[in-house]
Image (cartoon, rainbow, N blue to C red; front, top):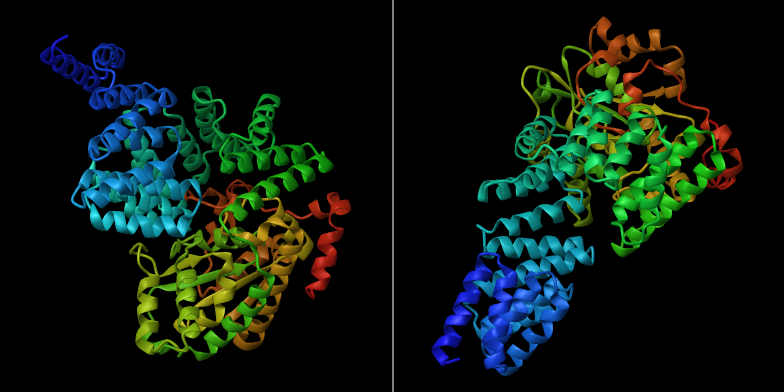
Length: 592
């Protein structure tokens, strides 16, 4: 083979490679190497073709040899970086790219690839704050790179900043022709951000592109469940599992719409996923909870409790990887800081906020009955159901950050916070509910921001409430939810704060006992509506008929007739001695 024939063979190989004909490309590259076994270009191309054919371990020695022969050739080193990344050796790949960037600072392709692999390394380490910083730098350097915005969306989502994640992913959709995968990912972010209309539109577009894509079908099921269309939700789950029998989120939705009553086949599949060490930890946690709910539905309490413990053990392993834990000492300090921040904040003039859109805050421990209370109020014609809006939590964090720096908000800052609170609320109503349960911490600040605001606090039997928390799969940002002792400690933190607000805010902070509200619902519902400053409307008694989305754990229960959900603590009594002792240690009567 002459030199010209050798070059032509490589050229024909690269053309076949570019066209995806990898077997043909490899045959041509190997023919060239038979003539010139030490040619760096042929070695690098052959190694890259092996990588692209799914054989990175076979390709890496060739790629490494090419770099050894010509270490200054950026293209060979970048091919090696790609091979290393495909083989899962991201940090080595990153080092190779850094060499290229050091030698050629203007090599945009190498720099862009370095950003991508660095993001993959940080995501594998679950280092979400570091990924957020890296994604910001990547976006700044390459604002037209949709992968940069995708990384920014992932980091924001993992850090619990769902609206920010939505915004970042909207840039992904704008920078490329979106696929069903893209639109489904965006819809998932919308669902977490409680943007139901945006999620619906994205899923409709995704379904038109690929009606059998399993994550799309699962998200469709989730949306149907939130809207109260439970048979439709189960149908979508079944279609999803027909495409991907081990797609964990579908089992979570099935568990909820069927009230834990999984079929034997579903239970076996969920159990298998929960024990698979190679499955994503989020999927293992979700299916472990589904298994626990199934045992609970069958009244196999010991098996259910063991399954809940296993699910929480998985969740705590994930939390340790992400350097997150519940800090009891910090929770105790936080209560004092919250009270001080509320006292230091100036009160806005009630006349300035009179006649404007008013929030109705529904607060309490998670799983205390806040969804029921919101459902009754939100059935009123003058009320928009805001659900668990995150904005007040952001405002509280900003207030505590000012306090930490030795400052306090002025009237201008307070007004800016009230304006920010009402972004993304619809026209045509004069009340908006906010049932984020952790807003019990913000009650003092709420009183300063909205002198006319109504705050309804829901209190539930502590033992029942804490057990209900333990039996749910909260997001990873609820670090107290995984150990009975931590749940009890947090209940004590909550109980002390709401007692303080009851003393200091008087009639502006109204406490409702969940048990009493349910047992005398026909009389209690009109009184609740009156407390919220509204005239009675009969549809508030029949809130289950509302077509609105209910995006909480209680979405199924909230569509059923009102009934007392207590009674599980007695079933689990032999497992709750630690919880009782921890509640008493926190100064809480377990039954009061």
